[in-house]
Length: 287
Image (cartoon, rainbow, N blue to C red):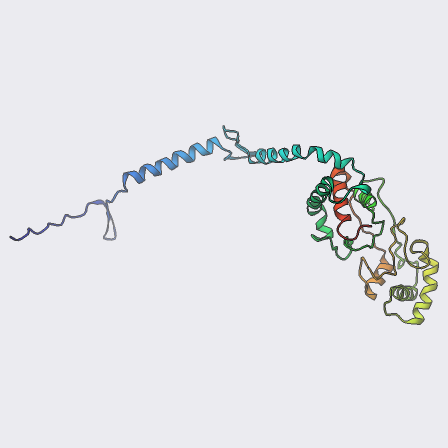
């Protein structure tokens, strides 16, 4: 018994035709269409319920009142409340007697590290090794003193900061501005380099010793070891803030460096200042 041939049905079209090409009438599945409609409805609801539409000053807040900023602020406040007791103790702590390994000392190191990374690393580096013009905090060469309380004072009031009347202040003259002749500067540079064992012409260094005695000893002392009360660096230890080459030292003597460190008392709390001082002190160079 033979099968009847299946008669093929002509596909239904929409009636649209472009250059002989017809458009088949193949509607999407109804479930897909309804899902599409639901996404539109959900998007409209979301734009009303949550912050969405940009305005002149901010965006629409949404009737749910959701705010990521408020959530973050709530989380921050939660930890602030948790650490409130430690913060109070840190603000009142005697840094000189803060016992290493104690709970408060551990908190100071962790808090100080975070504060340092946020506010200090831009100049002193993430590892506190400094750079040209920015002191290395890992060694034991301190312009104003390296005990923990002195470090805290430096952080609190800054150096040559215009915003703090108690800032540490000293100024090295620009000896190239009609103070010394070019030959005198050349000679005193040779003498200064010889103080730390650098290579220098002996005759020039001898002549520079006279220039140094007449112009530099008031701050750097007769032996060149400096004076922390004035922030005058030790010139005998081969540690240089602005570079140790002949050209760099000549520029220092001629132009007079005038670095500025902000006074952080306006931006950091007493607890934060004490904590970052303790953190810096234990990095390896604190006295």
